[in-house]
Image (cartoon, rainbow, N blue to C red; front, side, top):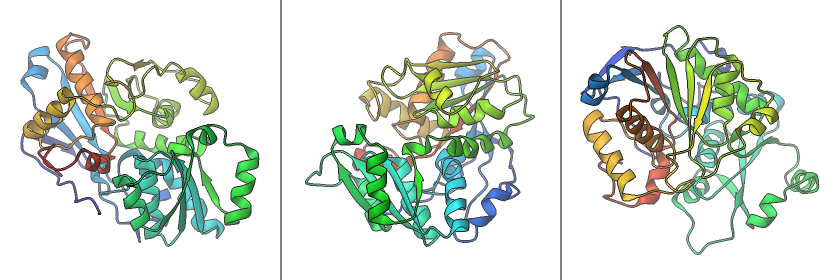
Length: 331
């Protein structure tokens, strides 16, 4: 089922400025068949922020598209561009049963008349996840492999893939690659020159964080909120992505709620409270954990008075479908 559009609400929020999306010329190849909307930056009104003397805004990348939203589009864009220009009409990528990346890839490829194949981590289940059902509905072929085999994917396996599917564009899980980093770096266009003291974002593969750090020339401190339990390999990831950080950044590992896609009643309650207050939907895997951490750190005086903080909404709302009906106050 295609996700409903996330409506752009203004109640309890002040729109600062609508940015121009289309001048990023790299998107011209895909925007004709995959309509994109401008994200915009919004202020969040909250008595806690007022009390602590800080301002918090949100870059609404979730508004770009109802499925290929947030950082997913940016990490995919150069791969999709290559697929269109090279004539290789098959895109192959990797992910888990609840991967936003797989869902975004499936929808984008269908829209662009490209064939897509997802190599899925995990043994076949009696019932497919909502995400994998969505991928099938949008034309993605699925190849499920065991977790142990998934961990051991090597050159021989990639050679088998080529023999099976022919020439193709291969996208690593979550877009984790220099090309994915390059796409993610385009997100900087939306807040360059806005003089934020901090830029916050949730971190999974760290591709988006790497892209932002790699080209950002502002004085903003980058705050990454890790959504994986025990994420202690950030420097290794940066080395693989060929990022040599020259600016101030920190990875905060206190708000993963047990690990990837883990949740609690407290987190779900926070998501509903946040929506009721700001009319902004969050996803429980990434953005909810970031914003929970933001509120908690604010209450603990982590930010100096006068701080101007931008939180990046990385989309991925389709993952909420796995929560079932009536859990959230929004679709």
